[in-house]
Amino acid sequence: MGRPRIKTIDDSAPEAEVKKQKTSTRSSRGKNKEEKATEVKSDKASRLSEEGEIRRESTSSDVHEQDRTGSEPPAGGEESELEKRDQTNKGAKETKKQKPGKAKPRSKKYQEIAKDLDRTKTYSLPEAVDMAKKLSYSKFNATLEAHINTSQTGIRGLVSLPYAKGKKIRILAFGPSHLQLEGVIFGSDSTIDTISKGKVDFDLVITTPEWMPKLAKVARILGPKGLMPNPKNGTIASGEAGLQKAVEGFQAGKTEYKTESKAPVIHVAMGKLNQPNDELIANIKTLYQTIGKSRVKKITLSPTMGPGVKINLTSL
Picture 1 (cartoon, rainbow, N blue to C red):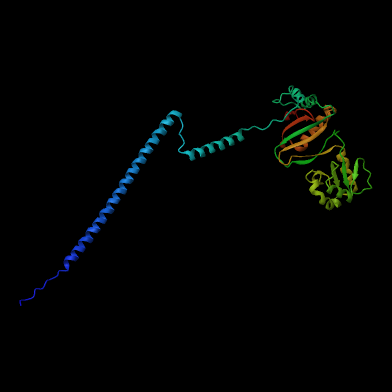
Picture 2: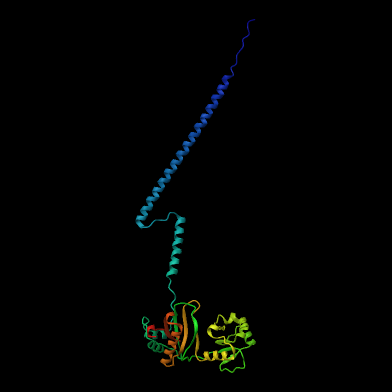
């Protein structure tokens, strides 16, 4: 028998093959990734180029549209709708701003009489009084009213007109009821209860200090009407003599003047149109001096029914 032949098996060969296979697999994977990345880049480039072309086309079309119309076209449907809404809102705001106030309706009689009046002119006091009488178109004995524009609000006081012949004021007095004063109604606790129910049938309230705590219960009713007694306007008087003097003063022509709550304007009755011009002129001059020349900016006279006449203040 000869020597046995031993076959040597080399394990490195299959390992090398396995390594080659792995390497080839990795390389193929890398190649696939690179190919995919290249494809993605090319896709992006193509998309960008397409978008650029679209933008160029839209820009060129916008430019042509702007050249033809002179304005920029809307970028899209939503933006155009927003622009339309903005324009609508702006137009509504402008319309509100430009909308003029409603003119006060005037009757035919007023318009016919106002033709004789030059509204741009200021008249001397005697001319203004005479003109105000001529411009009255009421069938009754009207009142001559003075409308005074002041430099500020909060002006308030009392004035005793020398020739006041207006309507008799209804005075409600709280104090010694045994006083006999003509044209005066003396109040009581039951009168306060009636006022608290909203019944007000008087033009002026004069009281002594003792009644003020009771009148405070109806201040919410008397206050807004300007009827709450106040020491500044002379409607609170001490004692019987003081109460009688206050009543007589108001009956003789003592008048309260005050500006409106929200406007520097005072409205005061100067007398009746059937009074002589000299009496009305004296009343106006007294009021003007009482308020103060420095606080008066403009005075307009007007009848109860008729246009107003502006006074030249240098004539006062």
